[in-house]
Amino acid sequence: MPEVPAHEKVLVSEAYLADPNHGKASCVSCHGGDASGATRKLAHVGMNADPTKDGGKLCATCHSETVKKNENSLHRTLAGIRNSFVERSGSSTLSTALDTSFKNHCSRCHASCGDCHVRVPQAAGGGLLDKHKFRKTPSMTLVCTACHGSRVGDEYRGQNVGYAADVHYEKGMQCVACHKGGEMHGDGAAGVTHRYQVSTAPKCANCHPDNATFKATVAHAQHRATDGKLKLSCQTCHSLTYKNCSSCHVRLESGKAVYEVNAPTHESLMTFKIGYNAAPDTLHPEKWVVVRHVPADPDDYKYYGAGLLTSFDVAPTWRLATPHNIRRKTPQNASCDGCHGKRSMFLGTADLASYETTANAKVVVPDTAIPTFP
Image 1 (tube, rainbow, N blue to C red):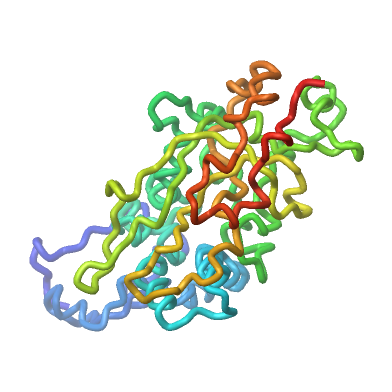
Image 2 (cartoon, helix red, strand yellow; image 1 turned 180 degrees about the horizontal axis):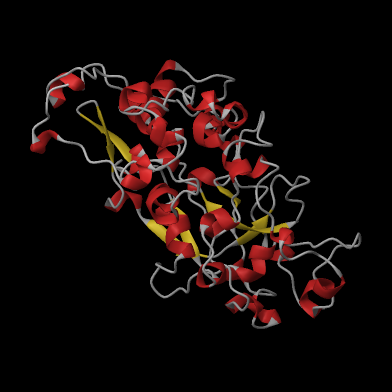
């Protein structure tokens, strides 16, 4: 191949070339293109910038088991988001209009193998993480919170003004300390339609078991049902105020999808609310849980057609939440009256917009049900 002009050379780090596995492969063996091309333009004819976006077929040549499991990963399928569309549409499948809106506004968040291990996720702008070096452990800031930043990332790192960082972050723990590869790759996720159904997701009890020492704490002993199990989620006592979104931050402009992160019509609310667990299961059996307002509004995607979300009330807009801002001491556990008898701590009808009253009937805590002192 003729000498390539200096301004057309692409630099690859020595660390990548020293990789005993990936470093042995030629560029064209993964990316395609024309190795005989005399210029960058000619060499890139037919090149595939992300050879992993097809579900990882190329990666499967060496990582077959992981790629097979990844077929269930919610990062790949986006089943959690898509199911919320299906739920509120009143049908078992998406209409053409809703399918179009999903593809326009949601599907770009689909994550390929490369989006976690080689580059910044495409949805967050792309760009190599480390001169093409493959990273077994994804970067918390460049990968995880590049997509999950506005709520999870800001909470965890204490970037919401006036609120401290998560105690685990202060201890130096990265996302992967709790969210292991098995969860991210889809282990235990077959057939699930929401992230809270994933059996391999982290649980507080993994590190803080509900043993005799734990139960010896007065508050841990008092907040139990007759069967001895905790009546409330850990976050109810140990989370701080967190961010809630009102609706999706999207619209159409001349037929093009536009994302309005900070538009006046998409204001975020910093608050803390305890509500009923609308759908208790074996993974989340507690009666009382922290609830967060999800970005759902009956007028979402109205620019694709009228009456698309005909069953909007089928699911709550305030749903089980696990804020990433855990502290041992919080305003609500400073004393009993941090929660007991305090209306403002519990989700009520006054916290709801008129269109979401019915949707949240199983989550709202009426005045008569607010816990009081014995």
